[in-house]
Length: 511
Image (cartoon, rainbow, N blue to C red; front, side, top):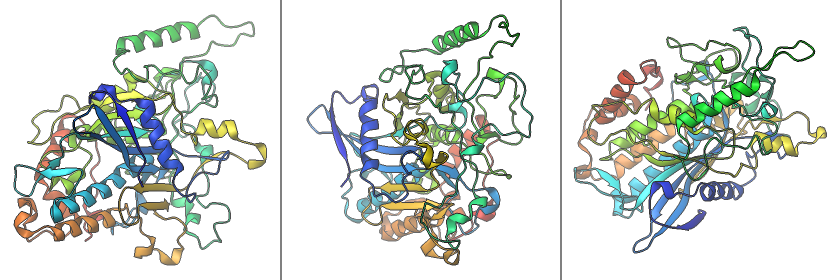
């Protein structure tokens, strides 16, 4: 049964209680089986979730329900991507949660077209189209700031820095940190060398989001914006704080003749996309370029997975439903609110990463618009965060490392849980690769097949016009036939993200 909480108050986006959302998501995680979870005190992970908010009729009460939850920190490299669509490319928690939500939405659309019994969708004006029920909205929770631009945050206390401030330019061949966090994806006692997680050399580096070791100290937990008031701190305030930090950090050399510390930033392991601006790698605050597209880091090879900051920014314009579900929807689906758990955080940086970069895009097709979410932070930290794991760590446990598995749970009737490692079902053997047994329920091929079952369940007379074409066969065909979504994407690409790499068509021709 899904976990739910009831909150009282008028249904306004800025009345969302961030701590209540975080607590709800952590409770849902606690109810999941042990498989795929981090080993306490030794492994850490990130968590994200999609929460459905329903306004209760004839009252000021909202019902909040987690409909999709994901954990994970990794993604596969470019050469490991499959033209069959049977490998899960990106296993960061935010992506897992969103893809699980797609499974949930397809199930709700299936109920709608079959018997009109959906708690999410009601018929829209256009033939074959659906829209959200009155009083229904969705918000997004992530236990940490998204990787990429949203994680490039000024450090507010030298004692909470994960490493000494930079005093010289690092060579281009060096990593940004976090490289010591790699681990085998195989859990203790998982099996012998035939287990898939031993294919770990195909997996990319985990994202370094700059968690300080003293993450629970009063200084390191300080947020640059109050958890319940996203407007309490303006960009000017943040800039003034940064200036004060600069003044405090600089000064004459000490008695030993050492140079003063340089103000530093939390760094991201995500790399600038080719063809765009690059990181200057200057000491301290000038290490990164900000506001640019980034791909998630790889081990010796680049990935094609855009950072979670970039993907979430695109959801604010294109919606989070994707191209396939846009066939059935009269309007794109947007998150009303994004809540971040306790971690290094800046309201200014989050707004830059998720809102400002796309807010100017215009000439969008009907059903699409710039819908920036309200940004909030909770004061509650995820119990399996890196900081919490370091606090609970004991020497006999060995080094701390990110959990190699990714968990998906969504509120569907069949197979709600999907645990993966290296893009495949967790624990499968090499012999099973290429079979349905090895596929994640979230990979492109599986989601495509579930979508096709929705199309088959729809009465031909009730099909959207875009799905009545006889030439539709491949995954690529169905995505391209979603014309309004593709038009919106073209506007986003041309006006905001011209360097966004498009997927290789040869990787999308499966059916």
